[in-house]
Image (cartoon, rainbow, N blue to C red; front, side, top):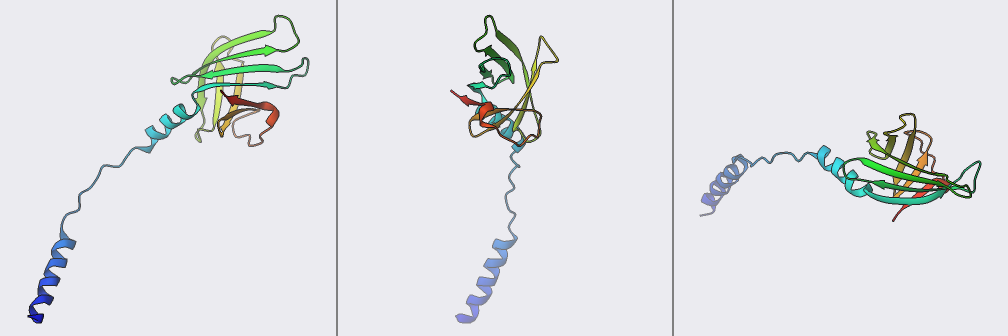
Length: 139
């Protein structure tokens, strides 16, 4: 009886190990990461950033799911100093930096770094220096 169990166990192991494994199609992470960025950063941000010639610039940035945006900038302490721009956001490869290009004035470009639910106005894509005084907080 013991002599017969060994061949049965070997045969069973071979049959199990040689059976064809079911293959699953790989999940595309590129689409998922793009959607994650949109969902994660979509919304309205606000804050006051420094200004050389006024008390500060109150900014309200609204980002939409289609990568369009609207940014209202109000120069505090100055009359009739409110600017409204609309355009599109272009993301860098890391999906952390957004370049905001105004439709009306193509020379008007702003770059924000997104981190921990906040948007930081930075000088250029890749600028890793975060300054709290340039922070916009998500509503």
